[in-house]
Image 1: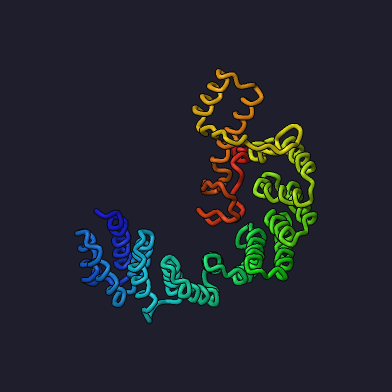
Image 2: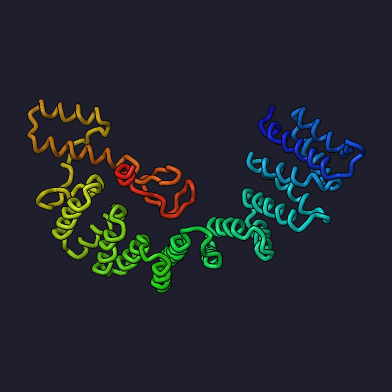
Length: 380
């Protein structure tokens, strides 16, 4: 039998018991509407479509089946059958004699259906109506904020988040990301005049925001203000040093633009001492003791990146008479390539892994939950 039917049977039975308890009695027996038993029969025969037809029609004649219909629609939505869920919940909402509390409950479920189906305008209209009535404020606000995030309506998300501040503990953090999203959009569209204002508001919402420092550095770097950009990038170490790797290339670019490569080498060497967990992610050219940039020798094929092949390659070269310095360089280069193929970041909430740092986890949609893998291993 379909798992949905197994779930619906106890719900239907409970609904019948409730109707029997509340309705007028004939001795010890309550007469239920014949359609109720017809719907149960279709469920028992695994005829979900026919059961839906009957039970949806039943809500018009038996008010005590509303809870059954709400449960039925929610189960359809969880199964991904959103069209059925919408139909069930729309029929409940359309019922004229529904109490205010039941109508609000049905509107909440219908709004969830619309959001799941991608009908964001309809979902927003329903959720706004519930907010205006003061119903399910925290739940509805969370749904609306999620909708605004999906639609990239950042100003609406900010306004609502501020209005229900305290909905959860990371309001300031989330709002800071929304301001940063506006700053990123301005950068993409060449509206550089708006960027400082957006970032200032983000800073006010979350003074410890690493993303603000990254965007300020990018803003100054694009304007050729390399000293100011370096100040922003290097300041990340005092906020969260383990989020420095995404800006290593930008830091290198600023130092080179200022013709200060020796300073870059010194900074990276000092960083490796202060933050040893970052050593595998520091660019290879900055790991030499003398600070000189090095590159693979031309004409030589890079070794394979599997551990076994890397060791076999080093062993073969040693037997061929390769010197220890070159062997060490080959080994380090191979290890670097192996590191580069591993995920650098993992969501601390859902475990989503990526080579790239996402400010919002693509898996669970949490903000600032992506952490360096090395950090998680150290703190496991």
